[in-house]
Length: 465
Image (cartoon, rainbow, N blue to C red; front, side, top):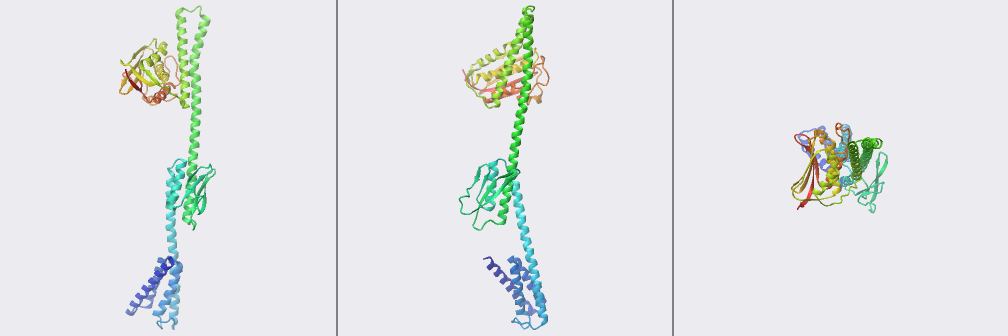
């Protein structure tokens, strides 16, 4: 079909050139000008047929037609004049060289166009893979790209046994395989069902490029996951180290106080006044409460980090929950200006009572430990719409706005020592946040004007009685 079309183009060009020459020759146009007309015909034929063979054939045909119509004797292929012979020889050589050069120029033009198209396609493929993450997305994108630009069914099989795409193993066509290589070695293969004519050079290059890009992108994905796992492991190790140091520090302080108070009672019991004995007993009790609080926070944080924080919900009356929390704190709050405000109606909340009591205790301990003895402390419970709102406020020195942003993160400590020199591990408020959010509530910190801070959390209320 292509050869027939090229032959028709050749005949049309020669016919048009001959007709034009026959028309202008009687008007006094010389044979040199007519030769230039046939040279143009050779060039046009070479360009339009895109064939070196047809360029030579057009050159030969042009010489014969010129000899037949324009050399003496006319309308024969005989040549009597030696000058005409030389003229025809030079005409043939010129036409042959011109046709050859034009054919090569045309081939170079076509090659440049194909190279430009290939480069643009490869650039597009590389750009498409840059923003893709996830192993499955990478492989499916590679398969869709092969289908889009080559209309071939492809399947990608990795060395770990996972496979994506159409199953080409059962196809009657030839199956071609392209290796997907990574930095550490082969990662898998792209399998393509080729048609009966095989794969063209452009398609073969496309498949090799997709295989290379899939390998590079998978390498990037594996490296990212390895770095992420390493970062998580290092972060976990760092947190464990911080936790151990914090536990050692915070246990040492109350244990030292307990040891000192116990030794004083044992060694000087008979010489101590009843008031001094009572004061030491009070110190021991407060430190035991503090130790219990530390252990409870550590256990809760361990459950939260391991995803084992289970809520044993039941409907609890707010007054009972607050009363239990305050009873745990009565010794620490005995000498503080402490007030409680509860709703006039009975409010029920569907909660894990033990954990919410722990939240209230943590907030009250935070208020006691981080404020001077003369500061006031309040616990207010109100109902706002569908939520029960708990607020623990104090009139202490407040908190820096920048630290307020990270107040509920683990291991956040006060900026400076408090009056008695004791510090917490920074677990209490982060545990409060995890427990409240597990109940579907929210927790926040705000300024308690004119001084101090308010720690507020909300819980969905079950109803009013």
